Image (tube, one colour):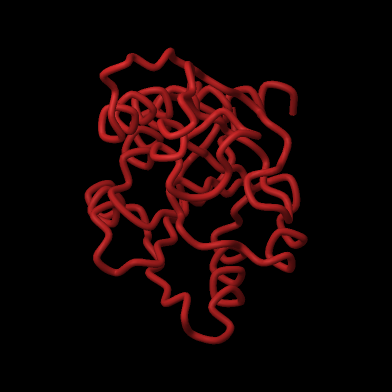
Length: 187
């Protein structure tokens, strides 16, 4: 099996990155993580890339033409899949048009509910009975691309934002990898 060269975009702890790196070591897993892009020079996730000898592009997203620099690196590394794993920056239409259906994102809710930020707070305020995570293709609208996979759990009455975040992240670690396998199973 020829693994698809993949780039993971992160902004923080990189816990999804860590799980994707571990899964990518399995010879039957369809991707090889060839590059990590990070818009936060202090992100803990950079350590996962360094520890696993994965090149990491740390980019200042406040600079002009930062997306062109990223696109050049993606070309240089022959990237065929981009995974947004807690990347806290909206990607431009130009960028999306360049990569099309090869950008996927993980979101901590059952989309189309609770797009955007402050997800867990809004879930609790809305008194939801159930929540989870969604892996979806990225399009030009925020958290609106076609869903690939969703995983869910029931909310307990004692759950707070921190508990919801932990439960959701545990689902994300499985969902992201399952979505990647699902995408390449049919290609």
